[in-house]
Image 1 (cartoon, rainbow, N blue to C red):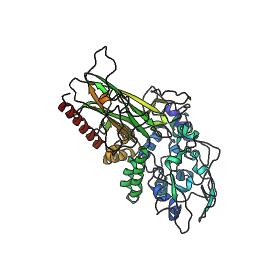
Image 2: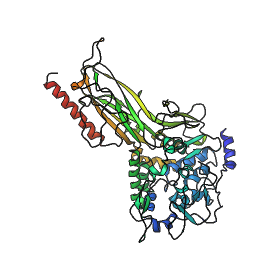
Image 3: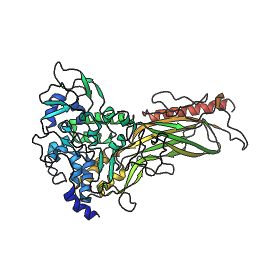
Image 4: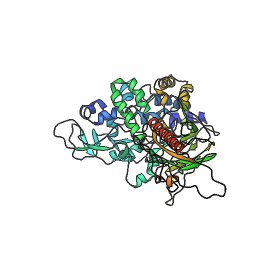
Amino acid sequence: MVALLAVVALFQIDLPGTQPGELRNRIGDPSSCNRCHRGFDGSAGDTWAGSMMANAARDPIFRAALAIANQDVPGSGDLCLRCHTPRGWLEGRADPPDGSRLNATDWSSGVDCDFCHRLVRGDGHIGNSQFTLTDEPISFGRYADSRAQHGTAASDFVTSSELCGLCHDVTNPLTDFPIERTYTEWRNSAFWAEGEGCIDCHMPGVPGTIAVGDGLPQRTLHAHDLAGGNAWMPTVLASLYPEEADALLYAAEKAREMLQSAATVTIQTENSTPWGGVFEFSVRVENESGHKLPTGYPEGRRCWLEVQVLDADGQPLLHSGVWDEAEADRLDDPQLRTYEARLNQGGNQESFHFMLSDKRLLDDRIPPRGFRPVPGTEPVGREYPTLPDGTLAHWDEAPYAVMVPEGTQGPLIVRAVLRYQTTSKTYVEFLRDENRTDDTGQVLYDLWLEHGQSAPETIAESMTLVQLRAPLPPDAGPPPPIDGGPPADMGVPATPGAAVPQPAEGCRAAPGQGSRAPGSGGWLLAGLIGLAVGARRRRTAGGH
């Protein structure tokens, strides 16, 4: 099968759209754009320079993955290069498909200004970088009355999600296997139905001038940092390209901001539980993004819940989803709750050889709101409830259970944190060990060691206190209320930076309420432990 794919790939990766050598007017160098569109607050040039779009070609993960793709299916790197360096591909330097003929600008500009601003709808193809460009020396934008030193024209395509979909759906053209489906996930969600597109989240607009110069009108200036979830790689690139360090570190911070808007976490529990029994609760993770959580490139990219239950002295009763800093890896445990996709390479064998993948072994990522799955996007390995309108739930409720021994000092402290990792240790080691072509895998591995080993980011977190009480006789009714209030079925989510209240008066969090942006988790946890110890001391002093 692999040999057959190799033969086919060398001659038949032939996709529609503008082809190499067809453009008489070549794509302009970003340096020419920067003369007018860089150097002022919020400028397109400054924000774009640190983006993963600008750095799509020189991303060390891409370089290492490109080598593996060409090893597995000779010639398949053509598919990779047409997305990651469309300039180099259109000008014929993606042949051979290992990138050896790309020039310095191809590597440094990735997906650049003139490329995106010359795109037209063409035949309406989505995915695999099946793009069509105008051959006129013109830049498309959203305004019809622009005045510039180059040709301009208004185009609704330049602000459309279909433009983004040119690269953000990826299919193996030899097998039709769906590798990435970010655009399709959005297209089949409530966000599409409500008219909220990619740029509304990833290129938000603010009032400003679009270029340098006197007397220019106020426009909507769209951020070109194109923030996604990758906060790690920009920090790596900042060390490699110090001339762009400010832009890259800014991009890393924007990625963290984007992650912190992606989900909410809520702890769902009664406000008391008996010692000497099993304490059961759940953690609700609600996807607030316009696509699956997480989305995009499946290799090495993952979310999971880290959940702790501590007694009043801070001693652990449960710790699930532990990040082991010494091993730079997530530890498995029986209650681990993950959100990720894993691909198969023949015979139910998990694999990172994405050009050889033929099945999704797992796809338990959380759907977006209003999601109606189509082939290639259905959940695999976890069932998300179908709602009355026929769409899938855009949340997950992860169950947990822990034994509370007699004599445990209460109240219990429950903490849930949603973690996100761009690149796993397993994937980085795969790219190093499987490379038989060049040193790009080793280079990536060394950078990974030098730059924090892609430690996980925090998307959202929530914490609450749960009182302990004596177990009830077998024939007793419901437990009495705490402090005179009615029983509660939800924990109190922690608001970052705010004081954490002790549950009383039947504290209750409404469904969907939770902490979206992470605060100082250690500070909050210490505060909760202090509250718990104080509560225990008050009970002791009061004789109960």
